[in-house]
Length: 94
Image 1 (cartoon, rainbow, N blue to C red):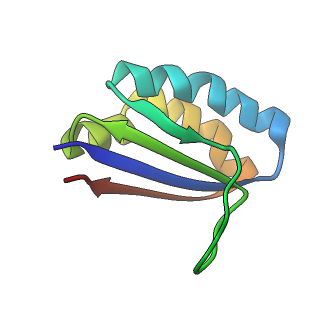
Image 2: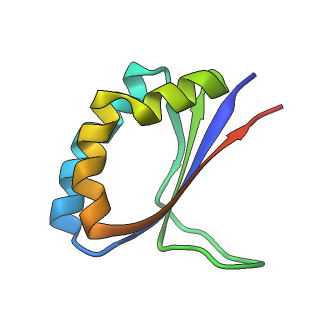
């Protein structure tokens, strides 16, 4: 059963955040992840959001969790956390 990472981000420093993006993309691919949405136009109909919205499909929940905790992604995340406000969730698909 697929799992989806839902990430909402407000970036405070685009140049520094680009270092995260350069590492995160290959890490996603390494774990069989596929970007379904990465930025782009959006509308909020209920609740709140952040400026950047990302949706990543992983083969299953365990792979999605393993990816998040992997050294590859943690290295990338070290660049993102100081320069962004983020909400990161993993949801099991149907």
